[in-house]
Image: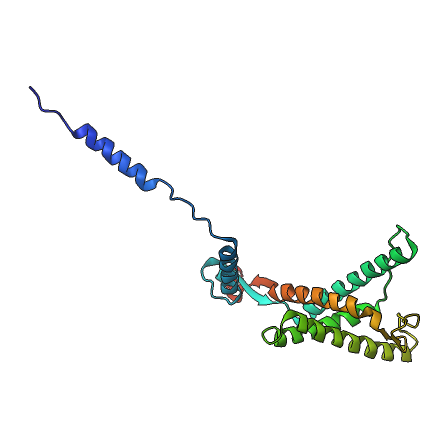
Length: 212
């Protein structure tokens, strides 16, 4: 009587072990907050040039320059004024044409105003709560609007006139716009925060040398 062979069972056991080894591990689903933190950590590591390997050799990442940020802020303010005046005209006239109006001067006024707000945000973000920052922003907007209005009025070029409002001062600013400017400053801070996160990538010098 021959002895039973365990060779076949050993082969089966080794195959089972192999399948167990290559079986995909269970996926760990992180909470949304942890996922966001991980993304921010990776973003900080990438933007601070802590990354390495092929990407580091091919590209160099830099923050947007001051003029590029000014350009984005100018377009943001310009668009917001067109939308606001269109909504205002609709509320006054009920016209569905939704025609907004502004001036080319608004590009310089909004771009410079928000660029200065950017500096305020960087200094105040860890010192003041959001509502206090927006109050400071609103005060600055009134000061900037009045200053630019005075200069433009000297050349008969001021495109706005608040003389019809009760809270108007010399037709250049009005207290009725305090709430809209406060809300605009809140939106402006969101725009500033996201603009400061933008990065530009371009071929690094080592990569350019290799390609040459």
